[in-house]
Structure formats: structure tokens, C-alpha cells
Image (cartoon, rainbow, N blue to C red; front, top):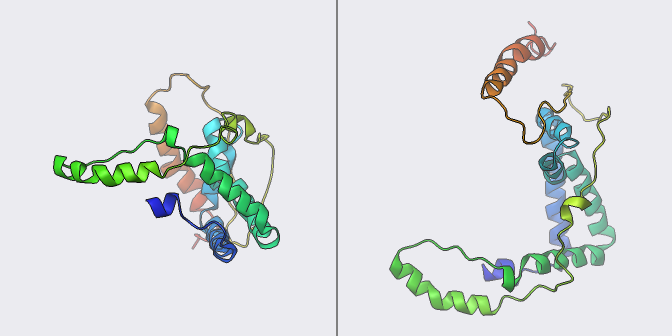
Length: 199
């Protein structure tokens, strides 16, 4: 844990570039095979904070971010390293650290001394690093028509909107209807009528 949290090398440009290239390739492949999931994530972004976060951390916006970060890592490494150091400084804060251990009484007693030694090496975060405005810094997503060109034989098309307002009571029947549409009507009328699935 100490090596991962405190002594990981954030100055290894070659390794970071390799990791970003791997992420880019993995997401590119996923877009081809699971475009419907990305469409669904994109559709939820304009309607809820959770949707915006999901889009920024695992949707098309994240894919664009990875590509931009890869370009920056290859051409402006000091800026990327500075960002990585700032992230670590924000995450590792002795005053906000919570340690959760599970074990029998003998194990917990045995780990007490090494744990205290570890905690003494955890730095305090600079007060200028942390911020409470992260949710407000997320970009807004306008509900408009858009398309992405990907090399696939299948078109992934999605349309969505908000069915319920935040805090509104939702009947359990909604889940039944949604599942029926997804595994019944939409599968029979849309998926199986695709030219790829016709006899």
C-alpha cells in the first residue's frame, strides 16, 4: 500500500504513454462491440449528475479525454506529470485518511505497529489543493442530435429523455415494463430484423 500510494513513480513518461495507448485501444474496441452502452451513457448525461459523471469517466467524453491526454503525454510531458502529482497530493491527506481493516483480534493486534508506522509517513494535503466545486466543473451536455463514425457493420442508434423527475416516486411496474420492452418488443422488432440477422 505504501509503494502504491506514496512512492509510485509519476515521472515515467514511457510507461504512462504505454498505458494510455492500451486504454485508447481497449475503448476503441469496446465502441465497436458495445456501442449501445456508450449511446445509453451519452443519453443520460444531460439529465442527471450521475449521468454526467458516468459520461466523463467511461463514455465517449472519456474516450476523447484519453486521446487528448495521450497527445499531451507524448508532446508536453511536464504538464501531465504536474497533473498526476496534483491528483496524488489531493488523494493522499493524513487529516482525511480512513483505514478500514478486517481480521481477527490477533491479526489486528499484529498489524497495529506497522500501520502506525505507515500513517506517520502519510503527508498532509495542501489546503490549496482540495476543492468542493468538482460537480460544478463538469461540462454541461446539451440534448441535441449527434453522431460518431466508427468502423463497424452495425449502427447503434439511441434516443432518450427523462421519464421521471428527481425525487419522484417510481412504481416497481416500471422495471417490468422496461424489461418487457428491452427483451421482447425491441429485440423482436429492431434487433432481429437487422439485415445481419435475417435469413
